Amino acid sequence: MTARSRSGFTIIEMLIVVTILSLLAGILIPILEQEATRARDGRRAGDLRSVASALAAYKSVLGTFPDTGDEWWGDSATYGSYGYDESGYIPGIVPDFLPYLPKDPNPAYPNATGAGYMYRSDGQDFKFVINATPSAYLVSNPFYDPQRPDTGWQVSTPGGYNW
Image 1: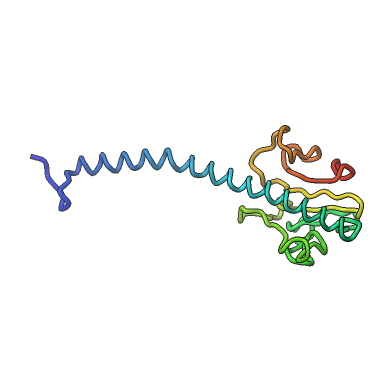
Image 2: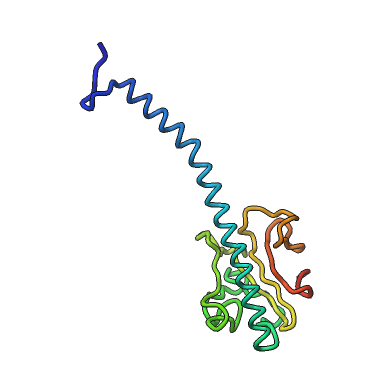
């Protein structure tokens, strides 16, 4: 006769249940992490689209793109630690063209190595880059960055494409 616990299960039955639950967790956790990564990349792609639309609207109203003096401005310390409001890394676009500047969906970014969002413009051309945070860098990606093929996604005017 096998000893039963207070719940009515034998010790062996409880070990089997724990083993099955552990196996399921071992299978599900990587799948859930992969889906979270895909969701973050989807948000990044949406950020690129919304900023590109806001920049097009800005130019149609004001005649130029927000100018950074042809320098990179970003939310990481490497690129000035600019914020997400009207004095942020894309000057003058908030609140009239965007309610706020986007921030990477992963709370680990921006960071001190330059990973995060960055923008550059001379007024006539622009480039907006998500640097070192996406999970995939495929040449077939519509946001492929030829200057950062293994670290960035971008939207730009033709003149800013190779910055």
